[in-house]
Length: 117
Image 1 (cartoon, rainbow, N blue to C red):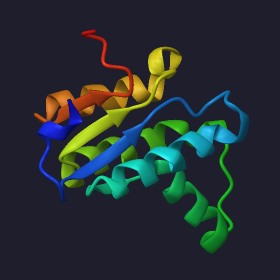
Image 2: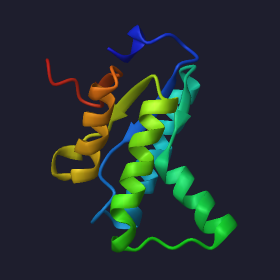
Image 3: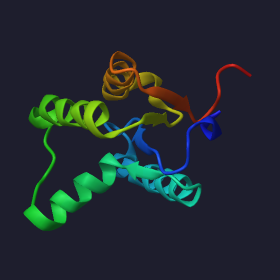
């Protein structure tokens, strides 16, 4: 289904981070590579977090969660053409907020597992 999106489009990767080993970075980076190799530009929140950690000494804490999700939703609204949602998102409040931000701003939403099958 994602192949309906023109190459060169920007895709935001969404998925569960909280409560997952290493914030699920492995899967975020995996999908970034897959999508980039398919010709898309990618906004990867795991990459953003890693760069903050390396460049600014930033450390995640739960009291920053609302601020981070607000920033991510703004990125979706202002920079992304679509959102790609990884499996495992069902129990992720943040992923649901990102999906809602995409839908509210008229962006396409694609799922790792196509639920229509």
